[in-house]
Structures are given as structure tokens and as C-alpha cells.
Image 1 (cartoon, rainbow, N blue to C red):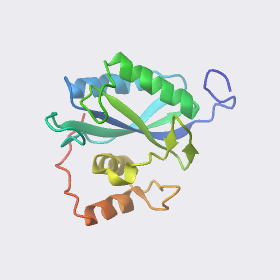
Image 2 (cartoon, rainbow, N blue to C red):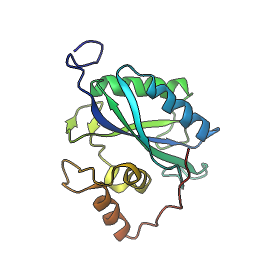
Image 3 (cartoon, rainbow, N blue to C red):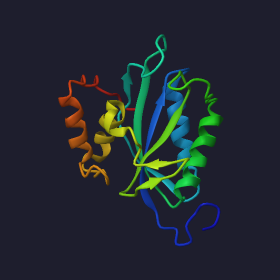
Image 4 (cartoon, rainbow, N blue to C red):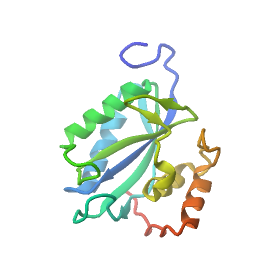
Length: 175
């Protein structure tokens, strides 16, 4: 491994969730997506629609915007995480309050069928199956992606969540 890139430079598909509710979120998302596209041995393959969702967390914050992109990258998972956190910082991400307002939140929700458990990174994302604002955009681009622990597709996870009474998201927009 050299600079977080595997020696064989084998690219894997990763899904990155975008969230934000401060400033010009659509412009921030576009800028962050462009920054991801510039990462070494990384390319953006697909983008979901952009969804507006009520905040999860402290009351009184603006609605969130959420999306998911699919990338191909040869970066090792922790190198990708570090790169995404640098992109968040570039976009004035401040980690002041858990689930509080933010300009940009980038989460690795899955890397193909990998399972990673560490103090810095859990793949697949531990809460994704409970988050409509992650599952709906994921289904826009990878309906058949299979959760390696729950053994259910993205669409099955979304359907199970909707069956609990979760309200369907409003139609998304292209960004």
C-alpha cells in the first residue's frame, strides 16, 4: 500500500452519502462531488437525485438535503475516509453538535460487499438500514446492492423501512 492506494490499484465501488443543511447546499454538494472526482485513482460513476428531508437531531434546524453517489476508487477505506473528511473541512464542516446543522456531511455507507469494523470506520454504515434519507438515494443508483450483513438488497431495506410507517420522501431533483 502506498499513500492509501493499493499496490494493484484495483478499483472498488463505494457509495458516499451526502448531507447538509447550511448555506447553498446544492452548490456545496456539486463542489464536494467535483473534489471527490479529483481524488487519486477515483472517479464518480453515478449520482442519485437530491432529496429534501426533515432534520434528524436537535429541533429548530433547517431541512436537510441528502444524496448518494457511487464512485470507483483504488483508495484504501481509511484513506478514502481521510480524503472525505478533508473535503468536509474545505467546505467549512464544523463538528460542534451531534446531529447538529452542517454545511456538508460525507459518509461512506458501503464499499461493495466489504465488512469493516474499526474505531474510525464501520462498513456498511451501522445505521443505514434505518435512514430513509440514505436508502432512497441509494436505491436511485444501486437498487440491487446487497447488504453484506443483513443479506438484503437496498430496495428490500427501503421497503422494510417503509413498512414500519416511515413516510416516503418527496420527489428528488437532479443536481
